[in-house]
Image (cartoon, rainbow, N blue to C red; front, side, top):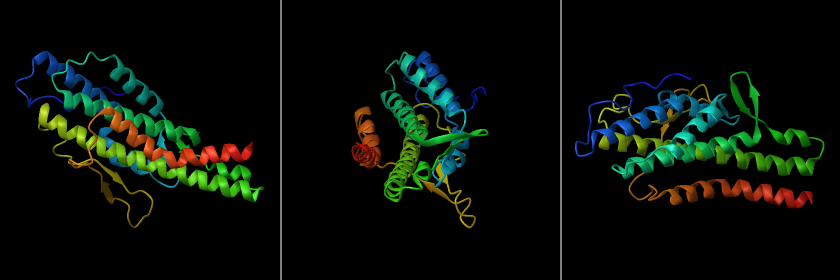
Length: 229
């Protein structure tokens, strides 16, 4: 995996009241997260992850593992609690989005591609109909989690600029999801961002939001399992 870009969270320092050793730790973590979660290519990979045949980079299992390992083992100093919260929220939402996606995907070259599992029941019209509904609910939940992750990454970047480095992705601007579905719209982007009312207040609220997004799909899976019995 490529080494983190030293310009991601480096100087200038925005918060002079925080001990230098804490700033260095936060900078190190932000650099790694930025690299592992492909922030520089965010619009492109999330664009492909939100199509009707979603596609994720094939090495994302390693990326999410590295992120979770780092978040769980970091000795957080507590000097910048909003930054710590936004980092952990970003890691959680992206990991959940990827985990849901991997429930129905297949390896295809350098990518993982969504698998239309309803095709396995093509000879059983009733089952096929149920599985199509289940697939569409899964597809929508995958898309919504990527949009949620985009809102989190924009919030995370705002906090980094406020607390750590005012130039963090300043020139690149907001993170967005690029439309890759229709040739006429290719290049169009959707910017997703929280406002003060919608931004989660703690990690439990983040987890609750993820659960609400996935709930309709889980309900259909449960219904299907009951039908099979």
